[in-house]
Length: 358
Figure: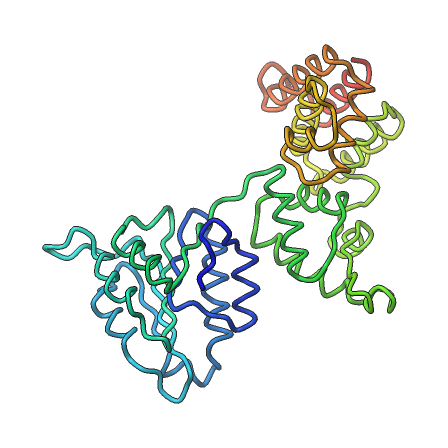
């Protein structure tokens, strides 16, 4: 039975494909090409051996593909293999044939009764495939799945993605480790997943007791040792220092950033702090300050994170938080050369001083 569209995620599809559970048709669509490229390659790698690909793998490219030829290939039985894989890449470039409103409509009849031994993968980049007859037939016959490959947003979406992907690899990952990866790598999904893949393998070298319990963990120390992000000098720790008005720790972290500018650009620190103090302001102005309500307002699944925002509201009152948001906006503007020619880390130090004394 097909997974409901609103529950389909990269991690769920990635998991089921690795387990050899294939759909007859995959429509992979959206603005984030990485997910599409990885899923279609994973299907090829797991559904067919290298020897089987010579006869049972057909790859078409949108600018030269003819839909009728693709469908004809889908209806052919595999040779010396259990399955045949047909992939249409750059499907958004498929030219319309004379007399047809949309060539993708031709896939509707195939979707109603696809050949069980064929796996059809359509990669439609840049937006959604707009053939309603095709997608309606796909849904009615439960013959496939539509996956929306959306760009991930910074903040809670990115952090949630990191946690979910780590969990899909059989690893736990704590809030600090998640924040370190989000700050350092950002929304470069290809690099992010590659680093998590590597860390999940390295996590297997933990204690025998942890492995026996299935508790592999991606820790801040593991990240520091293998990716080069300091577990003590990062934006997560800077948040913590400011939350507690620990001036010594805050300026020590900024000094470290200044000595290691490649891995610690000030623009990232300003963005992280803007997000943090914006959420603290939301928590401070909330009537219901229960953990569950703060989690709902902020949009986080982490109770620990919600408690951190509430802790900061005991350090900074609402007026201070409003002032801090203003300081952050001012620093962002000046760091772009508007109204100031100061060094970026001099501006960051000035910002930290203003926050601590707000």
